[in-house]
Length: 368
Image (tube, rainbow, N blue to C red; front, top):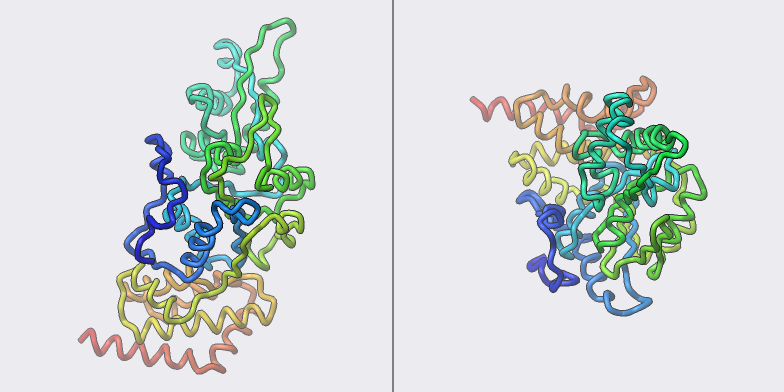
């Protein structure tokens, strides 16, 4: 893509300093993909076409196929702050919309355990506009799932107010509501792991183009600039098929697989600086064979771009390509002996293992 600015949706909008930090900046190693160009063009073309507007995107594919990188690239192209929510099995409606917390007295706060005090203090010290997840992950270094679990415990403790005591309450929105209200690009990672149907229903309703969230304090309508990018892994342990109602609310879907060999090599060169095309081509061929073999034999692990990046980087630093194949790629796919045997047989049959030995000899010659 030559000019990213041609895809900016609302050039007249002015962002706060905090929001500017959320506008993703493409690193020099970023390579524009066909999918990125196509989606950006489609969104821009349809943006003011009413019911034809494209504002819910689904990226479905294997782990390491570049889904999150693509979501961030769309943030840069469209000129919208990027944020995300990582779904987990036990999410409830408070994780979708946020929570109301009582503001405890200094005495009540001092009586709580230090860890619980730290959570409430982080929230009380905020302006109340940021999401619970953002505050706790930034200030206390928690994951979103840890933040949600801790909040449920603290809400329960804080709700145990002495009889007759006057209580002030404060609402803290979820990351979803924050993006929804302010018109950001929100990546919703793995909604197919959510078990509670009521939670999925709340999410589905909000993804309508004219949707809204019915919060305890107000009704929040979907901002006209809000874009939801749903990223979902295929054949991943713990996942179920994506909810049909949620899938129905998507206006554009991309099937994310391993890119072509040429693009794989181009990306790893940009990422690692390693430019030996003979070696990188062979490593890419091996990744492709392992990926196909894992799929054909219903092996749950994935041979993807992440494995390729780290394997190539290790080889570039002098590691044995054959030895590092196991701890950078194969063991990431599986550590089951029978499954490893299937992968090894596929590599032997393709003649790629023998070529690894040849490459090692050539590399040593070139180093002399």
